[in-house]
Image 1: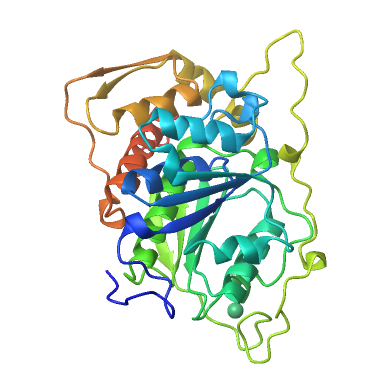
Image 2: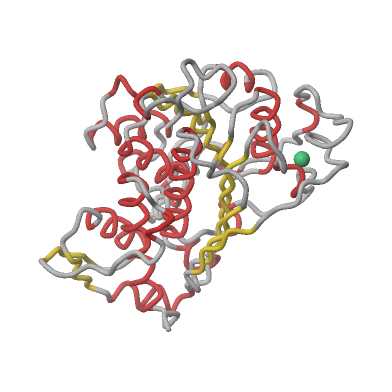
Length: 356
Ligand SMILES: [Zn+2]
């Protein structure tokens, strides 16, 4: 815990109840991240998203329910957190996007930003803005069975642009390429964990973490700083935020949800087609009746499994599988969320014959 009196030169806080965190994007990564941060005791959470809940994304956005379809994500997330016992006074709801015009002001009011949107333009903007504002950032990304999480020191090197340089011209988004729900559960929990360690000055910043949900491999990879980096190198060219630098990767979710047709939307279609579950795999999941060992993570494990398409879950006394990555999750909130997601993922791997 920091011994600094007022944190003027450091982003660290004396205790989590004093901390203010901006969460950009309340999708597959934002949902687990925000729940883990709230349960860990973060004093104030500012939730920012301009999107509405879509039925076909519910398999990976566990804070939302069918009745939330069409509702603004920030409103639905705020209500979901309240239902889980998080005081309304700790949550600030902001309808909107992170933009070059508002990013620095939004960052001024918080100690750290957690970014889990589904497009590169927002990721680069969050990375640049946090560097210029001198605030640490935790960025997450996920596609299919893989995720990356990175905590970045605004005063140190490397930065986000040391590795990724510029937004790609063409990149698949989660919505286009699909993502396995519990994979973003593990990744979102890790984002919360790294945010907490950063806030408490526990030196979480540095390596980029990669998680492969198929092999269950979690690795920390060191990134080299680049001398010619446009943000943190010698003679940086990015010294202010310019909207033109963040080409508006059209966000598919930004549009209004499609009108309901005569037949119900198949919420698992995208998972089945694109996240490599396949028709056979989805049929196997649909046959599963899962008995969950009673534990503090059982509700989340069941939530992830039901949303992945299993037939049903019941909870009974038993000995739940221990989280092999426990050393990476030191706080109660992130550990609970990561454990629930990881156990669900393990069951799914087993059902799909991926477990060895
Ligand atoms: Zn850099």
